Image (cartoon, rainbow, N blue to C red; front, side, top):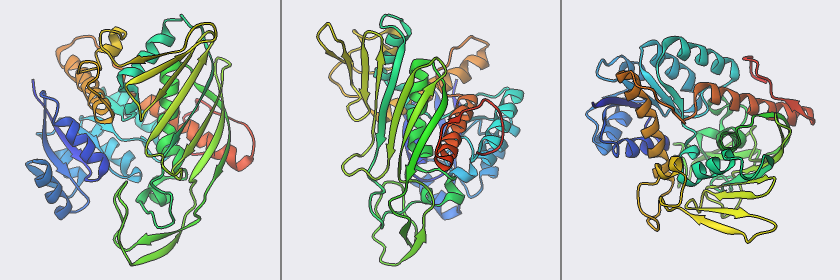
Length: 389
């Protein structure tokens, strides 16, 4: 059975989704929507997509489209997601799910009432060695996790001349580094441990309170060569440090930065359990480090024959054939479309992708981090489906 898909967006996220979708034999990409007809036409031609729209509503209204991938800038997420659900279409949204937790709470309720498959792209869950870490923690062999710490570091916004729409709070929200990449760290650590962040204490900072915005804008992860720029105020954080308390009593700390020279996409975590530590680094994704006090430390490599069954299913090539970021994204899509196929056939299915409710909880945590920075103290992460902090 072939599922027909439309992608809304033409930037980095959209291109990544399209590449992964082309690798799924049960999926047919039939439509693409952009912010203008020329953009949509160019992207559709480049990616081999037949239909191009200059309106996300036209794409959603197309009867051929069964599933929508929302790869728009943050400020459009809520309305695209809501429109897809209203049309009875399955929806996979880039994170954040919306601009604030009032919007995400509404989307959670809307998706549940509609009965569509809805997910959010927290794709780091879907690496084989991340799933292996979860299997090891879930086994109980090493005892409960007492400390979770790590970082997510990048350098693509290091200089004052670096620019992207994510620097504009009206388009991206009142948090940038924490919301953009810190949310990934929060999701993956909570997913592996099964524990929810319940309190935060944050210190955020902005190195470049003014940046040089190029006349024509710029693409994500691509430096602009524009000589015409305009000094523009920036009111979101370049980096931050956050202390964490989990609902089982565990403690944690994360450092988040988009201005760390030489760090391209380093999501790193260490989970210190009662008798062992488990460590993973996204830039070395095919290894998992296991630390012990009374035995030799060891490094487990991504070998399907050595992994837990749930992790081995995410490894598509033999040991030594490296898999990375694009493959984790593909694994997430396999999971998402597996859920769609199971619902269509009436079969049971246990999905592992992040739900709208998961994304709502992560956004509540981001809002609490912003509130903590402002108040200079600890802030509780509530389960309330309330307004932005």
